Image 1: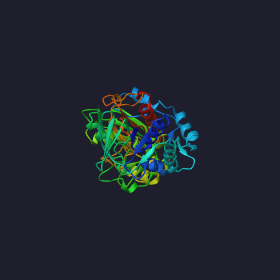
Image 2: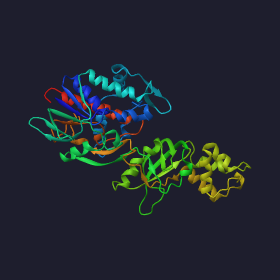
Image 3: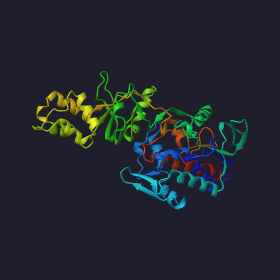
Image 4: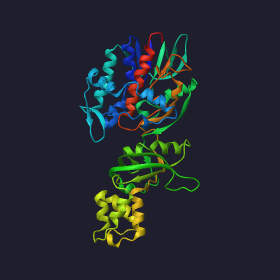
Length: 416
C-alpha cells in the first residue's frame, strides 16, 4: 500500500498517478475534506495555471538547475490537457493577468474534479486522519496518528504543504516530521504575503489600487540609501491597506522582506515607480512646462487623486501651484517620489496570510526522477514542502501538479 499524506494540490495528483500506475493508494487528510487551498485560491476562482512557466522567477536556496528540471518535468501543455481532457475542466485565459481559470470561475470545480479522478482511479480517502509522525518499519513505513493509532505502508508520499494559511491544514507538521527524520531542509519563511507598516501612516490611502513597478534593492554599505544592488524588479498590481501594502507586485517581493525580518537575509529597500510607463526624464520634462496648468492636475492624470495629492504634499508642493511656478528643488523631490518612492514597510503578515512557504526540504535531498528522499528510502516528497516557490499567477500550482505527478509515479514504479 502507498500512503499519500495530504489531500492538497500535490497530494491529489500524486494519489491519482500512483493509483493509475496500478498501486493500492490510501490518501490520509487531517481535515474533513481536502484541497482547501485550492478552494481559496484566486479569490475562490482558482488560477489553475499560468500561460507560460518562468523558472527564473522561482525562488530556492537549492539548485536552480534542479528546480527547473522538476518544474518542467510535466510541460505546461500536458498539465493543461490533464485538466481539460482528462478531468474535463475547460480553462479560459484572463488576458490582463495571463492566468488560466476554470471557465466556470469556481475553484470547487477544480478541487472536486481532482477528488473525483482520484476516487475513480481507486484511491481510498480517509479524512480526519491527522498523521503526526513517521517511523521506518520493516519493510516500509509506519504512520502514527494524533489519536494514537498506527498504519503501515510500503511507501509514503508526504504532501502536507508548508506552513502557509495553517487554517487549511498546512501547519508545518510535515516539515517537523522530515526534520525529525534528519532530512536536510532550509529555514522556512512566509512568501507571497502582504507587508505591514507600523504605524500605518498610509492608512488614509486604504483601498487605492494601481499598477506599479517595485524594485527591491539591498542598500550599499556603509551608507544606507536608495541605491545598491538590484535584487528583483516586478510590475503588477499594488494595493494600499489599513495595515500596510498588498497586491501582486508587493506579494512578489515580500519574501525578501520576510527573510530580512527573520534574520535570513539583508533588509531590502523597496522602491516604487507609481506610473511604470513614465521614467524620471519624462516626469522632469512634463513638470518643466511653462504653463498655468496646475501641477496637481498633471500628476492626477497618471495617478489616483488621493495618492497624487499625498505625493505633492510630501514634496512640499501646494495643490494650487502652477507648473510655471514650480521651484526646481520641489520638482526634483516630486520626481523622486514618483519614480523611487521608498516603501516604509516594517514587517509582514506572516504565515497566516502567506500564499506559500519559502524554504523547506533541500531539492538535492530527493531523487529528481522520483522525488524519493535519498536518505530515507520509500519516502517521497512533493509540493510546498520542497524548497521552491514561484510568483503569483498559477506558478505554484504548476509546481504542485508537476511534483505531485513525479512523486506519485515514483512511488508506484516497478521495483520501488
